[in-house]
Amino acid sequence: MWEKTFLPWDSQAAQPVTHCHYCGRGLYEGEEFYAVNGIAVCDACLEWFARGEYAACRMSGREWRQS
Image 1 (tube, rainbow, N blue to C red):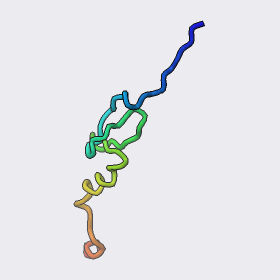
Image 2: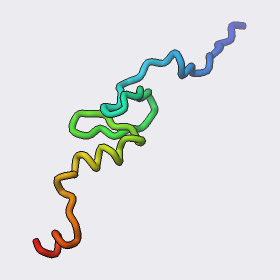
Image 3: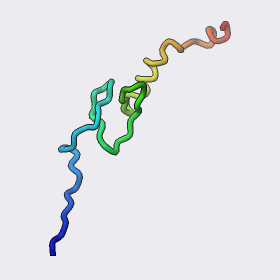
Image 4: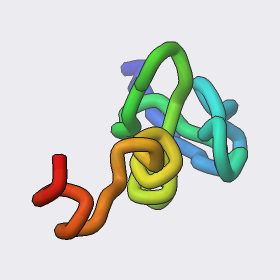
């Protein structure tokens, strides 16, 4: 009788689906990442991305109170 043999997934042979726009790390099938305005952002870069994206919105308590 013929038996099917499935090889384990080889992460070193897999090609990334896309790359993080900021750090360039490969993002693979099944891995979660953030797709923001057409770019991919990995978990490690999300905070850095958000700080840059919303830098113009940053203000101090004094600025807030005076607005």
